[in-house]
Image 1: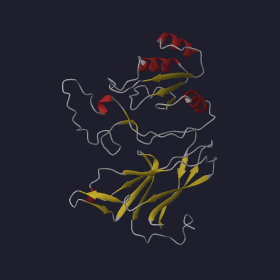
Image 2 (image 1 turned 90 degrees about the horizontal axis):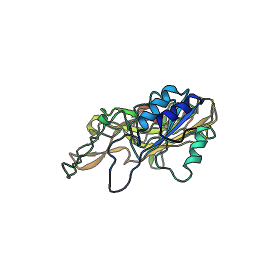
Image 3 (image 1 turned 90 degrees about the vertical axis):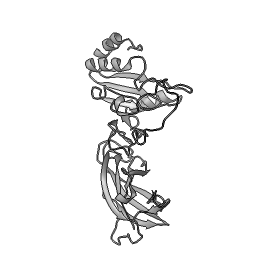
Image 4 (image 1 turned 30 degrees about the vertical axis):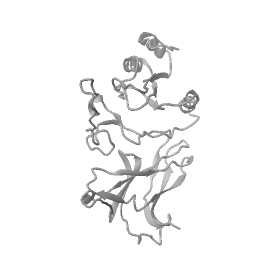
Length: 281
């Protein structure tokens, strides 16, 4: 094994292995910023060279936030744990060796390149101008993401069945079944985004909730419920200076902000219940 960042030594070790695991990281701290979004110590070159010669390459990335991964299409898998605690190693081992199926999802977007996000500040101007708007938001239609907001793979696949909506205890409930269509027991993390009508002047859909299911065996299903309050179904009107409840919204339910599996347009009034619905006994 090679425990050094020496590229030649790492490549030599990779040529003799069935699977090569590269552990890479970048540091951060208070009172200073990262100079760029690359991994530390020339890790990008290390990963590219190892991937060229290894049968399979797994990258374990311990990072404080967004990083660029220009080698992402050359490796077999990438595990990102952000800043874990003292059991980081044990958690990674459980995932890598298949004792646990991963269920994490990205709380940010990973940009395709540094050109696709905010340019680094310089010392020429010490005045901070917050002019980025939604440039780094999942709501931006122009953001080029290597991995979108909410993205995360596991060792199985899931089928999202058609949702239904009905009033429930002062809220509007959206319910659906998620079926494990793969061969490994795993947890799904369905996410709900709402698209508001044009008069709301929202650029894109908004995340309104997510649910992590229990462990779903292959072929089995789990019931998922999203409860939407009047505030969830409202948008802020700049013209009136008040919150306005939308008359109709479109629910987008999926695996990430870029992987929507079900669309459901629904009025927000209360006469929604279907007497024949299996989801609302």
